[in-house]
Amino acid sequence: MFREKQQIAICIAAAVMAGGFVLLRYLPLQKKIKAVGEAQAGQRLAIAKASAESEQLPALKEQLLKLQMTLGNYEENIPVQRNLGVFLHRIANLMNEHNLKGQLIQPGKEIEGEKLNCIPVSMQGKGRLKQIFEFFRRLQSLDRLVRIEQVKLVNDKDFSGEVSMQTKAVIYYRTEAGQG
Image 1 (cartoon, rainbow, N blue to C red):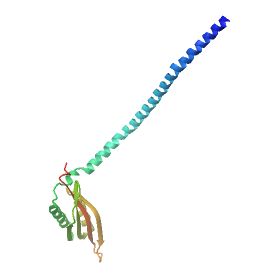
Image 2: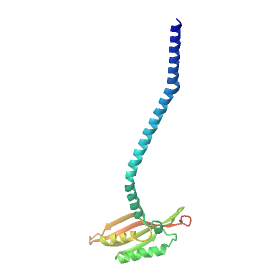
Image 3: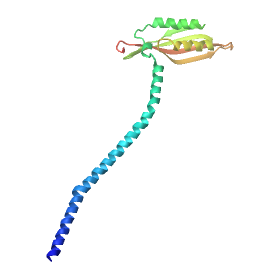
Image 4: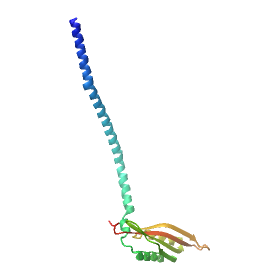
């Protein structure tokens, strides 16, 4: 009987030790192993994502260069001085250069903003379509930002090839606060 009690005591002690090992050592280690596995999977996913994004980097660099070339000297095309008279004179010279007749260049009421001011300008002229398009091309290549808002082209009544042009444009200049 003593031997049976001893064996039961040994079995109970072994079960307590096994239960203690499972509860105090094995289960916490399994949780840590699972957490480490999830962290590794997350890191692998982040690495794969970064690798995929790094492959797009050359295309993004090329796109940035194209945008920089498009913008060019954007800030330089918006002067700090108003210089409206000088600019309107340049428009008139361009119209003369392209043989546009019936010229009318009229500035509108200036619109003031926090950093930019704009002046609407109405332009009218008459000439051949090729002359008008060349005028617009040269107008856009000036060293001052000009936004064409509206163009109305009307063929003359006797279809002689002359086209009347009415254009609404906006020119910009920076305020002193908008510098830099």
